Image 1 (tube, helix red, strand yellow):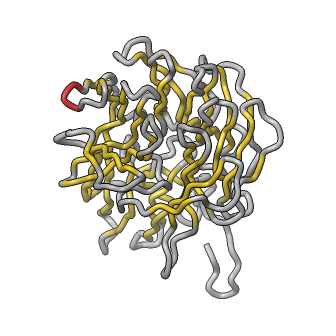
Image 2 (image 1 turned 180 degrees about the vertical axis):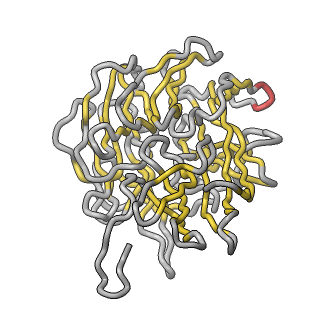
Length: 368
């Protein structure tokens, strides 16, 4: 609270929310309701904070996420927007959507939503969320032999398996902030590879598995760096606003976004040498193909990009040849969204995190 008279500030609630997005006072001033993302579940829930003691109590406690909150004039009813999402892992042999099968059936665990990666022997490393934690798991392509790889070590996401199958490279906040870590394929022997202030985008690997490419915002401007898979001093590759590196299968260049969004300009897609330097080529890509999001991947030959596009509220994968020509549709799903995907390096196996998300306006009474 802030005093109107003298401007003095006082923390009201001790609850350590990661983020608060809405506040509304009760009509009698005895408290307020808010939507807050707590440290335990990482979900936005509706909370009641009494005034002036600042005691916080959950009003909602489920697997949904709530956006905004508003109260009626008498303070007895609140309205919020409840967002719900259901996702599962699907495997499509050779990318054939007609043969796609669902291999996971848990509800509320957001399987694959924060990362998917094939192993050379045909298993799938993916993320699952449970009780607020995001961990890495591995499962066979038929859904059997599910095993947890990380445990009691913060949030772990965006896994990428090295081409030789020895390591998993991923982002983890176990050290207090997002850094890139490396672990054995069974999740053992974790090693921290970076020590920057902010890393959020999926790390990319060189085809020989010796280098990890990533973006960092350590100086508040995103730039692209690379580190050895064995650790050591990082190497800066770009010095202007750049993000989301994606190394080509040939190993000579990486795709990235250059520049930032403003009132007069938009980021450009560029190809840059894996040794850094000025862009070798600027690309004019379809509007749905944005290197800055994780739903983009090179094809096996390195002459096209695979991306997700939505038509009539149904997602499918498309391919765009860098030498020109219209985009080509690769899958033909008739329903649902594609949240994430990974095509195996040999092009024979496709795994997708598919499902649906929706929102409803909800009214809650008797919450006090």
